[in-house]
Length: 328
Image 1 (spheres, helix red, strand yellow):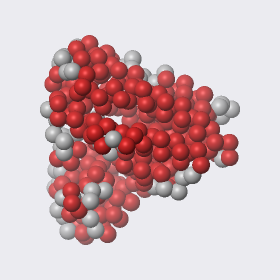
Image 2: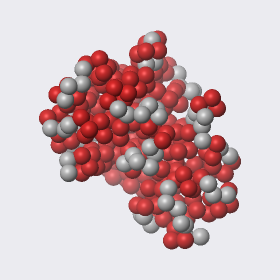
Image 3: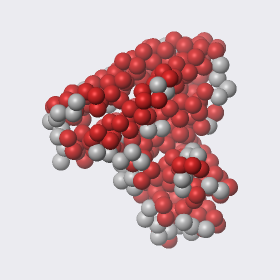
């Protein structure tokens, strides 16, 4: 079976195939996406992967999609992630090894994140702050759902087996995500409240899989991949460091835009919460996680750097796509 012979238009259609046919389709799509560089094949694979990730973590009382369960599904997920990881390694390992040579990792990471073009100076955030209307602001918030809605669960995946100061910093992050003990203040609930206030369905992360930009789907899958696979935990740590360093100023620009179109502050609690806590977490990640890790295992600087760069590259792809889609 080749990609040309696979008459599949959506990731949901892939899940309807019988196990043997499903496996052949996945194998062909992996070869096309990660070896031949076919964007259509990668689009299908990433959306399939997101369905498996997002639905597969749901408990039975939340009516998950039964098609994401089964040995053949889990095997396909592992194959897709492995092929993707090999592609990432080929892309980043040697260039970053050269870039880091003789440099302090922490200084490199902070400078790289703070001067990256996906930061608050990107044209997207000027547009959101100064010119976007309500529908355009809502469209961007909607598109960020696949990653944002799962953040607490992604953190929880990293907690297992980690101890000492790193465990405490992860727990601090997670406790903030849990609203420091208040159900109404959990970040997921705050996001759902904001979504409801501006007209986004609370289950958008499950029902709009085919509508999300592929850049957002890829970003969410990247975190699932690295938080779930313990071998890739250093990359996940680098991604989280980059997130805490680059996000706060971007969120302030979004808040400016929402206030400009008349959304009251009470409906923006999810965004305002992240303006301060992310700055605190950035320092925590550096001092309690990154520095101790590197003091004992300096060779981890490279996978940490890969995580930082992957996060930033994914971010600029999202920002550029948003400008193309929202400013036409």
